[in-house]
Image (tube, rainbow, N blue to C red; front, top):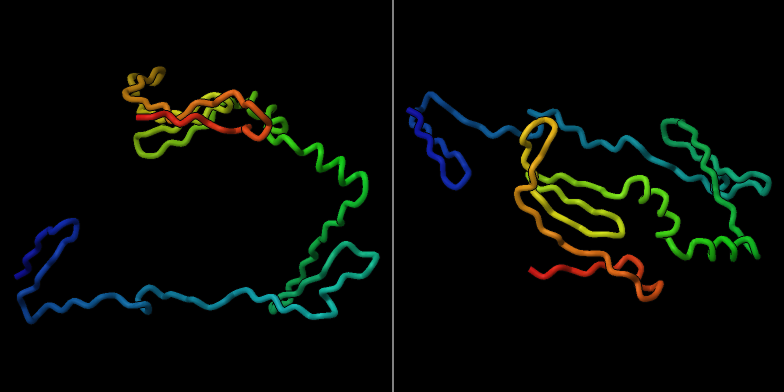
Length: 161
């Protein structure tokens, strides 16, 4: 005889017979393999690149060869101009935000909407027909504030509940 009951999300079965045996599966039943498949062995003479080559050759233990490029450092005026041009990240992303003003994340029946330079909203939408949806419930989680200084770029006003 087998008696099963459901207790707080777990099913419990008790077997009242000497004919039945129950064993938990072990690692061998699932054919698990935790071997390390990739190793990189660094040879001192291969680590330092030649002066005329921007690449380092790396070999694995399976004789796979990889050529890794090393970036060259920018020095002098060019470096300073590069750093100064990257001061405001939102200006660099402005073209993308114009093309796609809102980003959405669906999690369960909630949808999270981040409209760049506007607001963050959480809402539940219900499909009425293939062409239309209805907002059942919505919460505005924050609004974009006009920046007072460049340091305030990207700050949001959090809505109180």
